[in-house]
Length: 151
Image 1: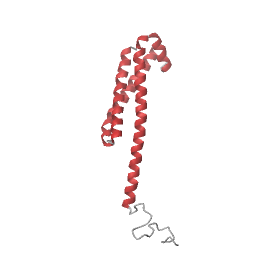
Image 2: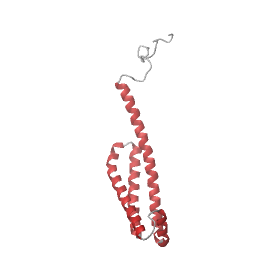
Image 3: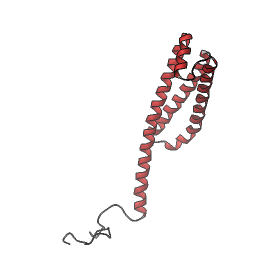
Image 4: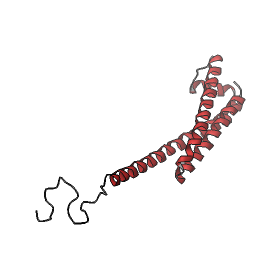
């Protein structure tokens, strides 16, 4: 494995982070419809990044190292010149993970608003404006026993 493969992963991770930050901008701006165009790009970048990571672990295994974080640390001990690139990759991936988490919260918020709006529209369509009393002052709810305050 060479530092070049780490550079490839770093470039891919930076592209993903940039895309996630753009997604966040669109979510904050409420431009949810525009997000659909980003989904394909995001999916493609994630697949590329996963493939590169898998290749890196395979290269570690071919060198007799564990195909995990521990093996990566052992490889870095032999190739200290790649430590900065590895740290950059890890930092970008952590930032991407956090950005994705925040984006998930924003999506949940939009979903909640959409559900609330749909509920209001469904009530309006069914003739229930959510008011307890109609224009005549009588209760709108048929389960109520009386129509006046005195009853």
